Length: 234
Figure 1 (spheres, helix red, strand yellow):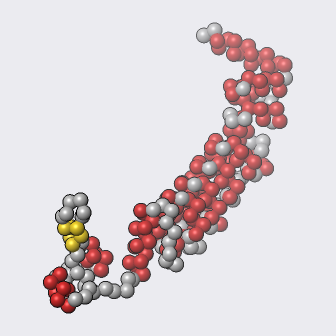
Figure 2 (tube, helix red, strand yellow):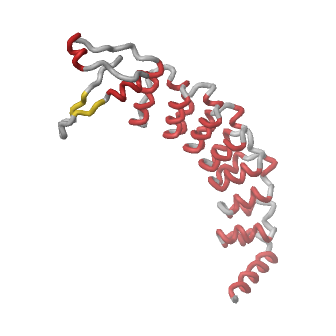
């Protein structure tokens, strides 16, 4: 049993009872009186349990985001890892294999940093919920996914970072939705697209940069310019 301890706060000089804290940590209902401890001339200490040590690690991490745990089981403890990855998604790399396959833990990591997907288990790198969360935070995280052929995932990644298009499956290179998503970021790519004479695609690209009209046929360019002139009259 741990004793009641009075902490004196220097600026207020008021004793603050901490027996409740110690009792909670020890799982005890009370504590020996100070008088008895003084009579015996000693304090009752104990070797901390694994749970107490891990609780200490968790408290330290909560106080210091850069804290490096000392206990070997810290990275196998879900509560500790959840807090760590919520602060820095890349901390997932230190987690145990089991926790890197824990959907809740991995989701917390990729939501904070999409690139943490590289440290997830192979199974979760192919989980659409996880991958969508990752690419919405970092489009280039698509490179760590096994869903590069999933159009919805690829379009979401491109919307976040157009360079994610480089990691899309080859069969999506000429997909209309994928190409449209790219053109909204980089209209100049119309020059190399098979849709360069498709009015809808040209209009989408021209809204970003009118210079793309140089890449289309004269007939289409004239038609688009006439449409624009007519709309300006209303």
